[in-house]
Length: 218
Image 1 (tube, one colour):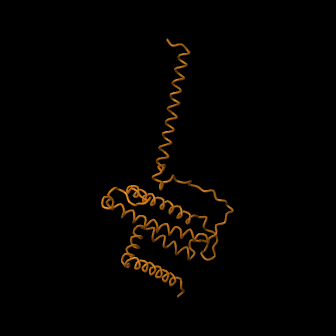
Image 2 (image 1 turned 45 degrees about the vertical axis):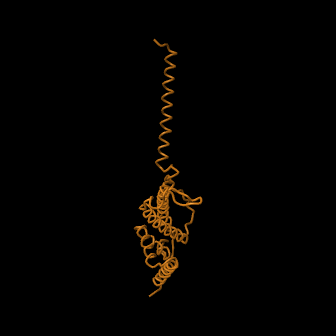
Image 3 (image 1 turned 90 degrees about the horizontal axis):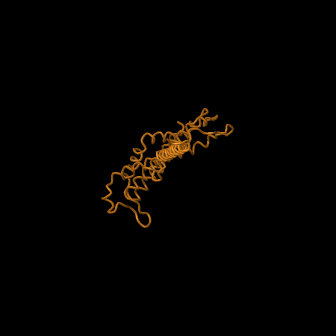
């Protein structure tokens, strides 16, 4: 029958095994947790989510005039997302064997595997979508409601910001469809590079004229 010393040694070994197994489980769980939140460097568009709360100094003054550039950034980012999505859709449909004998594209230091390029388009899509969500939440946040004489206290209702946000709402319904419409218009009006440049200038002038007429009092 084992003596007290042998029993104590066996108990110590058992405790050591239990502790070792506990440490391994914690480490394995942590690795899986990081990976699930986009820890893979190839999936940089899926970064871990940020904090759900902010600590805002109550004495900080939100100046309504600074909301307009944020709205412009949101609109531009939505435009970029739409064109990224159309590019991704088109590129995904292209069979790699029809455009490359080795599964790569590029040259002189810019060679990339087609499969990696498709992943990068996905990363761009996800990263832009995340930025858009953050900007949209910020513009809608309650702290952007100081007293503004020309909008009844809501800076989002100011003429310039409202105009931009109307564009945002239009694009946000379907960014890819909006981008396809823009590109189809360029293709229809263009006739080579000079034709495309002219069509862009014409479209810009047309939009500016419509906005000027909309703001002109009757």
